[in-house]
Length: 413
Ligand SMILES: Cc1ncc(COP(=O)(O)O)c(C=O)c1O
Image (cartoon, rainbow, N blue to C red; front, top):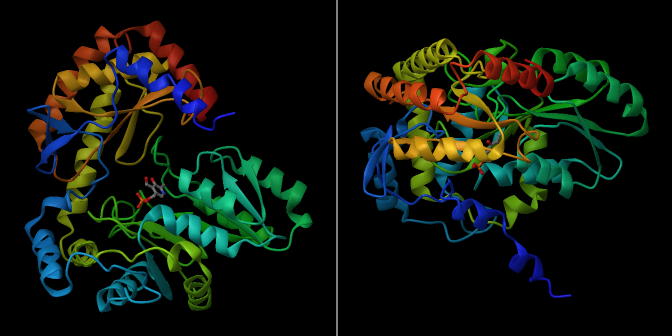
C-alpha cells in the first residue's frame, strides 16, 4: 500500500476549511505587542504566550540587533562543535543563578529540551510517571526514552500514588514529570504533593515551566519559587518562546546531571545552536524581569481583571489561576465557529479541540499579556459578551449548568 494514501484521504482540515471556520495558520502581516494585523485588519491578540509583552520592547530589540552585528545571524552548527558562543554560556550561568540551580543547559527549542533530557536520562529499567495532560514534547520524550511510561490522571495526586504503589518496585530509577502550569487549561500542578510523593517513593522530580517562567513566583522564576520550595524539583525545564520573547529552551539542575545531558543528549548534540539574536533577547529579558517588576505586575493585573470579568459574564474558565484563561465551549464545531466570529470582530484567539481535550469539552484558549491595554481588554470583553450570548454559552442558565457539569467531570473543577 502507498504510504501517501492516508494523506490523500485526510479530510479533517478540508472539512473545517469548507465550512469557513478554519482557525489555523493565519498569516500575520505585522505585530505590535498586544495587536496583530491579519487580512489587512488590526486585531487584539488573546492567543499569544508573550506574557510579559517583551517581544517589542526597545531594550530587547536593541540587544537582538547588536548580537547580529557581533555574531551574525546564525551559529551554523551544534554547540558541541563549532556553534558554542560566549553568550550561550553567559545565558546558562544567568539562568542557573535566577532559578537557584547549580547548572543549566540551553537547547535550540523547548521541544528539544524535553525530548532530549527525558530520552537521555531514562534508561531501559527506569520509569517515567507522566501527567495525562503533559505537553506533546514531554510525550515525545517518553516515547523516545528506553524506559516505560506510566500516566496518571491529570493533576490527581491520589491517582499518582495509586500507580506508584502498584508499579514503583518493578523499576530501578523513576522520574515524575509534569507541566508546572498546564498549557491548555492554565491550571497549576499540585507540586507540593507531588514532591512529597517523589520523596516517599524514591523518585526524581521534573517540572516543565514553559508557562510558569516569567509568570509564577515573585520574579517569575517559576513553580518552585511560586510554592516557596526552591530546590524541590531535581530538574526544571523551560522555554524562551513565551515570556522570554525568543526561541530556545533549557534544562536546569545539579551539575553532574547537566554535564551528563550535555555529552549524551542527541537532540542537543546533533542540532544547530540557538541563534545569536535569540540568545541576546533572552539575556536582556532576564535582566528586565529582575530590574523592572512592572511587567510582571501588569501581567497579573490584566489576568485578574479578565478572570473576574469573564466569570461575571458567566463563562466557565475551569478555575484557571494563571494568565491562561480557557473558555469552556462544548463541541468542536461550536468552538471553531465561535473563534471565527471572534476573528471577524477583531479578536485573535485559538480553539482547543480533540484530542487535546476530552470529547465535547472544546475550549477557546485565551491568554493575557502585560502589554494589553485597558481598552484592548474592554473591547475583548464586549465582543465576548455579545458572542457568548449569541452562541448560548452565557446568559443561559441551563447551558451554563451543563458546562459546569462537564468541567467537573472532565477537569475536576
Ligand atoms: C508546556 C510546554 N512545554 C514545552 C513546549 C515547547 O517549547 P518550544 O515552543 O520552545 O519548543 C511548550 C510550547 O508550546 C509548552 O507549552
